[in-house]
Amino acid sequence: MQFTKESAVERAMDAFWRNGYGATTPQDLATELGIGKGSLYNSFESKHNLFALALRRYSAMRIASLAEVLGSPGPARPKLKSMVELLAGVGSHEKGCFVVNSTTELPVDDEVSAVADDLFDRIEASFAETVRRGQVEGELRVGEDPEDVASGLLATVIGLSVLSKAGGNTERLHRVVDAAIDAL
Image 1 (cartoon, rainbow, N blue to C red):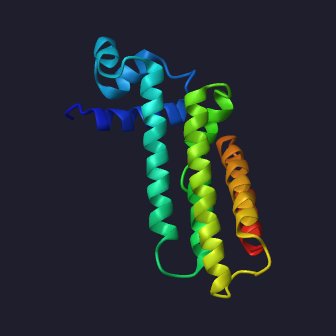
Image 2: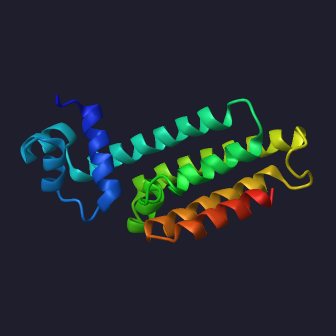
């Protein structure tokens, strides 16, 4: 496989997501990327810089998923359910959300906080817009502030992500998702 920075960032993202920042050594990254440690530093300057690139890449992927799923035609409820599950990793993987994992591991890292804040703001805005459309279409209960509902869904995603990463019971995770969506 040919080395490109983009593919290297994706492979590093998988390693950091799977193991966490602290448990992923520069040697682990070099091995994962199929390069020497010197090449790792020449290409990415530092482990932390590569981590920040990986975190931004993950965030961009999630934002693209939000736009694709929530911006598509169709009823709001199944789209919101799908995104809550995807963002939290319910049923698709057991790694939780890479951004949530990173903010809990590195709570005082300004770069991690900035990426997390941006992603969480975008998730909330996307959820709020979808709730608003669902209310206008008569699918979702009117009278609830869409921004408040979106904040609650974001909190559900974050909580589910932690439960998923901790090896949470799949049945429980699905019950939480169903309860959150049914409340709409």
